[in-house]
Image (cartoon, rainbow, N blue to C red; front, side, top):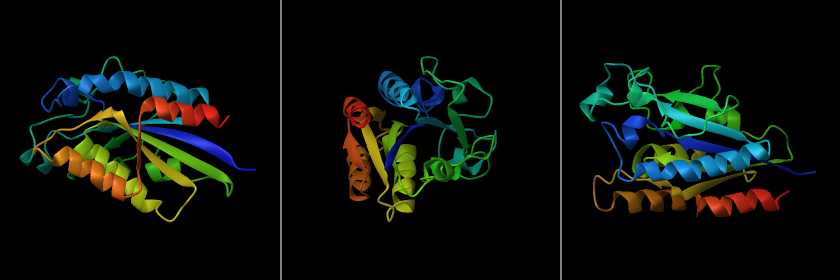
Length: 204
């Protein structure tokens, strides 16, 4: 008998990306939809994952960007209104001398990775992955594309982008649209958090 499993990956909902050194416009608006989908997934015994930039004080990454999300500083903390539970998995990325845009590169304190979390555990398990966070044109895109690439030949894994739970940096006028197009071309399905909740609820 087929079984569906649900995973939410919240990419970098951290202070420096919301009201700090690399603040994304209207980023605080993603917190409510993220909390909503995370609660729904927990109700159905799913897995909630949050990634975070966890940079050292000195890294070549800061040659490209203002200093941000340095480990154990306020800027690296998750937003105060984000509802995180003890059962949630926190994945650290950018911990060394790399950019660490993609959550795929990170790992939790227990060594968990997105690969180990998402990979179906039985031959009959279908996994639905829902993505939100910051920023659409950088870490969300990188994480989503890595997931899509790794599981492109596995029809039991479906990846969804929650369009009301993301915001873009927008360094260029077309950056956000280009990121969304790249994710669509990779087979990632763009839906709202309410649509995602219906997918979960109707599968019961």
